[in-house]
Length: 351
Image (cartoon, rainbow, N blue to C red; front, side, top):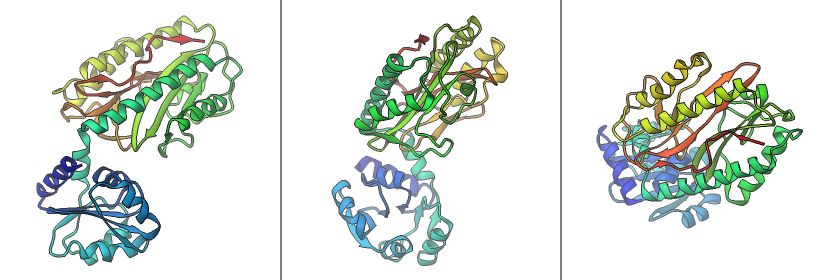
């Protein structure tokens, strides 16, 4: 935690600030170890959590080396936080307009600048890596469940229920990611052609491909992986698509090395898929950073210039989506310089 705080302060100082105020739960957790409602203030010497009375006890129990100052809820926390920042030049990640205006009213030198938080979080420390690795191990076990339970006649929602029961028992929970209404993506047949498909009551049929994208939070941190399964006899055309994605993902994983521009990782996957004639069906970027949020820096896309650094956590997830027919995606979360955190097979598993 001390190293994280030093990194945050260095980031603040690089933009002319001398302290930080974390308002989002992700950044407050990163700074303090507490995830909840409140405001965390970091200056050169102290870390203080201003928390409503109903959260103060948990903040005291969960945080590390922090002073807890009880306050009212919502805007009532701002004057309390402002007293801690007299004569300072803080920056904040506050994304709420009215709260930001109130902060600036009480602290004229307050700047909205989430960059120090984003930049510091890109490279994971040893504790973060251990948590992400354990989350990934649990996800691999869920793919094993898919191989053992997925069958013709089962519905997407039924498989999701089986997987989520296993996940919750192991402290894995929904991320609240806004692109889907469901905790998982389970998409069979033509539904698989929608990268962010909603889980439905559709029953799996023989000859289906089934995309299972598991993105869940474990002790604050998100691991994200996808495997595509076959049901019954899979046509040669779909096997060819699967093999193309598998080969592309392997090329992307090899490219995702320390010192490589993120755009090169995307091109390694995209060029291979295009060379096989499926370029128009690869309709999203190759990956993204992962950690306290599902999507964080760096971005693995065509135009991304960020250079990969050791211990960044990113996904590599090429896909091919043929409208009305099927989709294939294969995805791993990786730690740059350490490789994939997932061990479940990339071979096509047909049930």
